[in-house]
Structures are given as C-alpha cells and as structure tokens.
Image (cartoon, rainbow, N blue to C red; front, side, top):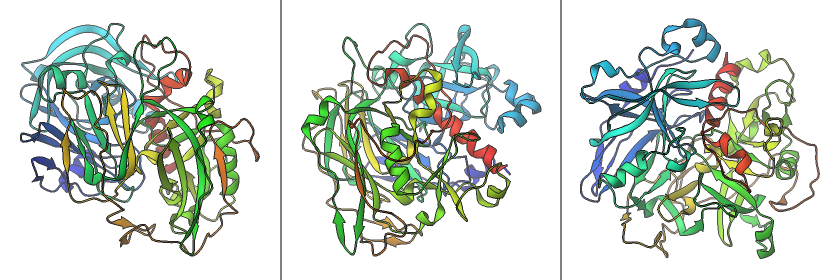
Length: 529
C-alpha cells in the first residue's frame, strides 16, 4: 500500500543550523516517497536543501512553497532536466481514479494559482514534457514566487501541469539550454544568480548512503567534509560544434569489478591514457533511479555476479539478495579522466523491492530471494533509436559520489563520498573564480560507514568472504569486445525537451536523462502490487 507525503512530513525532525548552513534532518521515508525542506544560509550565501532517502531508492523529493502566500508542494530533485513544474490542484491525475490506477500514483501536495496573489499566466498551454512511453505532463507556463528554505525567488517561470501521470512535480537544476519551452528562459539556477542569492551557477550534490536518512544539495558551495581525498575537476563534455552543454556529461574511461579479500585488495584496473580516444560519455543524473552502461560492460559484470536478465516482461536485471549482506568490499569502480575513481559497493547496487511478490511475477527467477540490480544495460533504449554506447549514471552511482556541478564554467567536480558525515566544512564558490577551485581536499578516509546489515563501523574495513563472486575482471569502457551473455536493459521514460540539438557523444541518449527515474518508480510500484 502506498504511503503519502504527509506521513513523511509528520516524521520530520527540527532543523539544526551549523556554521551558517542549515541541515534539515528527516527520518527515513517509506518506499517511493521522500520529502525535504530548506532554509536560507545567511552567513555564507550557500543554500542547503535536505533530501530524505529511503531504503528502496526511488527518487529524492524536496518540499518547497509556491505563491503568495506560499503553498507547500513536493518536487523531485533532478539534475537531468531543467524545468521546475508543479502539479495543479485540478490535474487529471488528482481527479480521475482510472488514471490513478493506471499510473499507480496519486496527488498529494498540489498548487492552486487562484490562491496566489503573485501568480501570472505566461503561456497558456505552452508547457509540455513528453516521455518515451508517450505519456506527457502538460499545462501552462506561469510565473510565481518560489520559496526554497526561507529564500524567495521572485517571479520564477515554471510549468503548471494540469495533465500528468505522477503526483509530484520536478525541480530541474540543469542548464537552461535544456528547458522544455520552445523559447529559452532563465530557470531556477539562473535566477539564483540573477537575484543575487549566490554568485555563481554551481551546486554540490551529496545523496549519501542508501541506508541513511538524508542527503543534501548545497547551492553555491562545496562541503569538504562530505568527500574523501582530492576533488577531481573534469570538463563537461561537448561534441564538436556544440556551443554549450545541454546535460552533465563527462568522459568515463573504464569500469571494473574489484574484490578485497583477507585485507588485500586486488586492483584489476589500470587507467590507460590511450583510452581517452575511445572513452564512454556518461550522463550524471539524480533523476534516474538505476544506472545504465553499454552492453559490452554490463555483459561481463552481470556474468561475474550471476545476475538474471529479463528482457521479455520487465526489462530489468535481477540479482541474488545475498549480496545485500555479503562481502562489503566487492565493488564496482568507475574511472573518469586520468585519476578520478568512484567505487560503489555491490551491496549499494542491490535493491530489495520484490518482497513476497516475487512469486507473483510471470517468470521464475533462479534465486530463492531476488533483488533488482542497480546496473542495467543501455541496449534497452536501442528500440527507441538511441545508440547504446553511452552511460547514464543515476542514484545507484551518485550515492557513492560527491559531485559538484558548475554550470558557469562547464565543469564537474567529483570524489568518493564520505558517507554518513555529520560535520561540515564549507567553501563558498564565488563569481570571481575562473572555475572550480583546484587542490580542494576532503577528509583522509571514510569517517563512519555502515556495513551491508546497517551497522556502523569506522574506516573502510576488509572482507573475508567473496560469497559468490566468480572472479574479478577489468571491463574497459572503450573496449570493443566483450564476453558473456547479452543483457537487455530496463525500459524507459524520458523528458524530451523541445529544441534538443546536441549531436555526438551521448546526444542520442540525452532525452532519457530527465525523467528515467520516473519509470523506475512506476516499475517498482508495479512490481510491488
């Protein structure tokens, strides 16, 4: 049975300010729902938006207020899209039970423009986002005041959805070059700077451990206590002839499966500079639940972990749930540039969503207890005309990474996340900078972590049992051959923004970045019925 966002709000604890930045802790949410809040950080001109996590990993919700007086609405934080849109109080999903049954969702906190004195219609019928399954969110473009944590952005353009298949809107924090409108407009991150709330278009994202209560987004700053080692700076990829980025794309050099046993880590990956000519373009997108890699990579990972790929009924990849508690040092490592590596524990990629409904699936899984695996193949997108040689790194990757998105200088800062950090050390980003500051170093090692069973421990620890991993193997992103059984990835949904014009690299796949997380949510809900 689905929970409501109101239930989660009742669980929220009081906000605690520290060093001028307000952290808003929330208790763990229920499946498919997350809610947060935010307040102004007066001292540093940075804004911290707390995000609630839950054990399933569906999407990261935030609560903002829209209008005068403010009306609370829930929106999904999405780095893969660029529009803010809210659900109308009279949206078809809110009033039609048949749409609710079909979509597996219902409305919670909606927006009524008749109750706002600052509301204005900008373009009646001008807002529309189309998904790859041909469903849409549509309505008007409007302007109204947005309050995000006690800080008001005046007359912000946003979508007002009267037709939708989801009960919460989207808080897109991507480039304004990717807005759904046929005419470009200053979006949320643009207005943050234009209204002098921060001095440069940049923010850092810390989703935190899947078993943790909260994550956070910090506008205008970097928190050095939230990452380990050096913050590597990568250029955002642009194809030849592309004037500016549309999505947050970086070159991914390689992917490997690493194993630590009896305190000894077998390093099975070596960054070869020659791979830079054949690297895979990866999109970093918080709006996507799972992560998608080219088949030449997933084939080998899936074979080593003995996963089961269902390319007939669900398009999902399943893994034995034993990996939730076995071998915390079995990791999938992603390398970017020459020296930036983020390692994701395999147990962070194991999503326990099926429960007792496993027996109700129309096919038999080869595991006594099956979970959904957080890495899928991009081959499932080929039927929609997309090249599969690209990667989409969603929440299952981003939870292990600390990522800084610099839209002014077209840069990405990335490092291993310091999970479950309880302290802050914030560096303000200023408009006078020529880019992200070089030489930023976080903590020396993981401060506090949780083992797969959820117990707190210090340091990275070591493993004494590989529990089912057949062996380890390097999988190179730029390689042209692979062994193992072909695997078909998850089916799609998409915010296909009007005017999408980038070519080359992962351009063909850009559209899937925005709302793919929505499909994963719906897919998870369908499976759970």
